[in-house]
Length: 157
Ligand SMILES: [Zn+2]
Ligand SMILES: [Zn+2]
Picture 1 (cartoon, protein in one colour):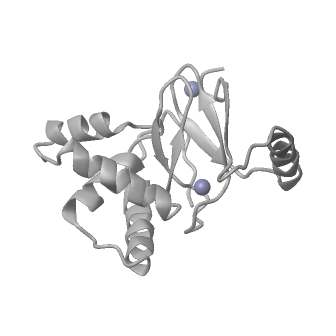
Picture 2 (cartoon, helix red, strand yellow):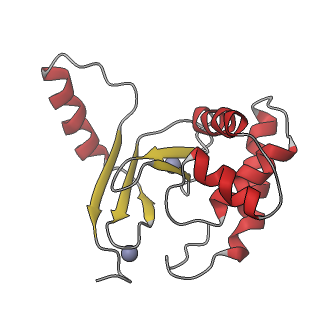
């Protein structure tokens, strides 16, 4: 997948991302609806995590109406199929997976505290092992590891 600097409008990546996401959703037996396409497109145009209300408002600004309950449902479907991640940080929201594995997987995001972009990077296996061991020592049964590091991206440094 093409990686673009966070400060460049990423219109070019919308089509390939949409194509991949729709194929994955279809393979997972999900219905390919118009709201689904719209939500994926909106996420693909953003480098920062987006919440359901922001997605709804962005679409509204384009004269497209999708109610927020539908947006929430689509976001959780995308998360269940591993196509999107919920990222916490300065601002909570969802980003599309850029590692392209069509199943939920541990994710690590570098979240810029200045521009808000979130970049997914693979979680090193050894580090993940350590994290899970620590959690286990506290009697915590981890379902899915999501790590985010906050700081400044290359464009904001
Ligand atoms: Zn991912
Ligand atoms: Zn930044």
